[in-house]
Length: 215
Ligand code: HEM
Image (cartoon, rainbow, N blue to C red; front, side, top):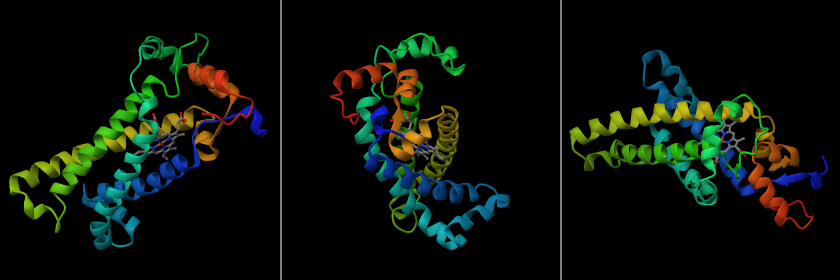
């Protein structure tokens, strides 16, 4: 497609971090789920063997955290709460029904995406802290048995919550046609931007000097 008609939404380094993080997240989430019930044990084959899963799960978890920390730095400015987000909440039913007639003043990310962003960042932080407390053989010996028990419970609950959030995130990404292409190629069409992120579209259209390359 002609790039003049497209708008750069996500830069290469952010897309690469997102998709590498998704692969690591899948491995960490599947191996984590494998320890919930014996019937799920087979899922730890994602790392080859159960022993490798036990060793690698926390290391890959740290990689997920670091990549998300990088995305946090890159995206936090677009995910701060703004007064305009109220319009999205007031019209959430129309948004879900795909009726974008009223200008909702949506910035680069909508209020729902912002909630998801903070949910993901909060939960990954809880997972990191609780993960360190229960990480044998390296850090767990520094903590008391009751702390490790609490750490295990918190880690399991935060893990389930994050997996549920991500299922919602992936579902919405497929549901809003054009979003996945934005995260794969970096570019979205002007009409996509106008329909889903009208205020962001106006801001970049105003800034654009005809190169079609600004975010
Ligand atoms: C198959 C799974 C996934 C798909 C299809 C997917 C898809 C996407 C897409 C299309 C976007 C761009 C949205 C836009 O431009 O409006 C995005 C953004 C994002 N994704 Fe994912 N994603 C997946 C998994 C994950 C996982 C596992 C995480 C974190 C644990 C994650 C964290 C994020 C974050 C932080 C953003 C930026 C959103 C913001 O700043 O508000 N994604 N994802």
